[in-house]
Every structure is written in C-alpha cells, then in structure tokens.
Length: 418
Image (tube, rainbow, N blue to C red; front, side):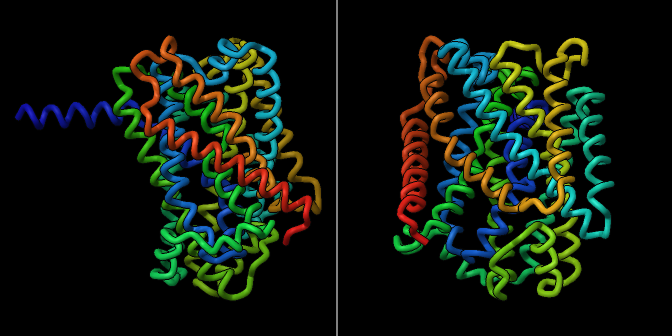
C-alpha cells in the first residue's frame, strides 16, 4: 500500500511539472524541421539516419542542463548570461538570437501557408487569420491554459509516425543506416555537410535552451520537482527524435526512391507522398504540417520575446498582462506580424530560406553551449547541481563536432566541393 502511494505521488508530481521539456523538444519538429528532415530523406535517402542517435543523446543532455539551471537558479539563461558575462556580450547574443529566430518564424508561417494550400485555401487569407489566432492564444490566455493547448498539440506529431508506416519503407536498410555512419567520402560533399549541420541545427536549436529555462522558471519548478521535470525533458527529446526519424524514413521511401530529390516547398513533399503512399498518408502529412506550423508559430516568437526581454532586463511572461510587460508583448506581436508579412511576398524560395535558417542554428549551437557549460559548472551558482563528468564530456564533444562541421562546410564553400 505504501509503495502504491509512493508511485501515485510520483505520477502526480510528474504531471504537475510536465510541459516545458516536452513542448520545447516537440517544437523542434516544426515547419522548418519538417522541411529539413524531408529534404534530408528526399536528397540523401537513409544517409542521414545515423545522426539521430548521437543527436538524441546530445539533445537530452543539453535540454536537461537548461532545465536544471532553471530549477536551481530560478533564472532564465539570458538572465544568467547578463549577470555573469555583462550587458555588452548579452546584447550581441540577443541580437543574434533575434535575427536567427526571425528566420525560424518566417518558416512557420510558410508551413501554415503550404499546409492549407493543400486543401485549396489561399495563403493571403490563411496566414493573416492564423497570425491573429496565434497572437490571441498567448496574449489573451493564462499560462496554464496556453500550456495545455501546446501540450495537446504535441501529440498530433503521431501523424508523422503513421505516415511513415503507410510509406512502407525498407525497414532493415533504415535500421542499419541508423547505427552505421556513411563512408567518409560523403562528408567531402558540400551539400551533405550542409544538411548534416541543418539536421543538428533544427534538432538542437539555440532558441530551445533559452525558452526551456524560462518556461521552467515561469512554471515555478524548483530543486524539489527537478527529478520529475527531468523525466519531462527526456521523454520529450526521445519522442521528438522518433518523429524526426520517421519523417526522414518516409521521405526516403517515397521521394528519394522515386527520384523526387528536390523539394521546392512543403506542398511538393505532400503531393509526392499522395500517389505513392495513398490519400491517407497525404492527409496525415498535411494535417501534421499545419499543426506543427501553428504550434511553433506560437512558441518561437514567444521564446524570442522571453530571451530578449530577460537578457535586456525587461519584464516578461505570459502570466503578466500587456500593461505589465509591454516590451515583451510588443516584441511578440512584431515578430508574428513581420513573419506572416514576409510570407505574403510572392515568389520567395521559402524552403531554401527555412533550411538555411536551420543551418545557421547549427552554426550558432557551439557559442550557446560554451556559455551554458561555463554557467552550469560554476559551484557558486549551481552548488551540488553542477554537471557530472559524463554530461560535460557529451556537451563538449557536441560543441567541438559542430564547430568542426561548420568549419568544414565553410572550407567546402571556399574550395567549391560539390
């Protein structure tokens, strides 16, 4: 009986703190993520599946560090960077995050437009309407109700797993490719390196660390609830990368195999799936893309507003009223209006812009990780919650590998490797 009560208490505690980790990880599979994973499968088949296991391990470690710092310090990441490294460094970092995230926001509205165009709806109607919906969800909602909307939306990513099954992939080849990296010759290709960096960038995006830590603080998670919060983070990371794996596999089984190697937009990807995997997979793809885009179009501007306002010392949080945090809400509003506005410009190469934004994410990962690792290993800041040796090793290896990949890609650009 005592054991039953103990487990009941643990389950209740988990559901009390669940949300930030699961939501943050799943926003990874946004429109930009779908473009990037789809392009990876269409262009290279199974050749990028090997990245999923190390990326998942790195994602768990990085996200757990963010959650732990939030629970122990009660402060957001940009807050800590300002306090420990000064305003000037923080200002330039916030500027970089703002520029990078704006590219991400544009991609989300491109996903909204593309998914609803599959049902014959014009982007000139759908994008403004969805922009208003996104704005109202956050500005007029309370934190708990907003979080429930986002958490419920996360489970729609199951549609991508179903779409993967309907695509009837070569399961054995996919599983072997997941544990066996390709020949080193592949890394000499500029396009392959570009896509590897993009896949990492869309999975371990810099904005995620800032958003997760702020969410943990706003939710009121403390050292006491930290262990349950850890489960939230780890389950979110595993789920999101399972979805990513299925997107790559589904596109490899349909687009790559049948010669559709170049995806101009999300509509191309969905239409390519329709005759090959049936109408059901096509509908699942479209519905999943719309959900992912609307979901992330709410979170990404929110993350940016949190990060910038915390870093520069302005009031922030969806629990506050507009009058209490005007800079926070105005920045959120401007990002939505500008991001939606860009999509209404005709003839933009939206998929190329979206994938490029994920590559920029990947290049920006090492500097963010360096700041995080310095902070999380400060005894006076974290006490007994500093990083373990294994966490430091994994995080530093991730930082070094991403730096090497970025430099290698720049080298291929300079020397014109294909």
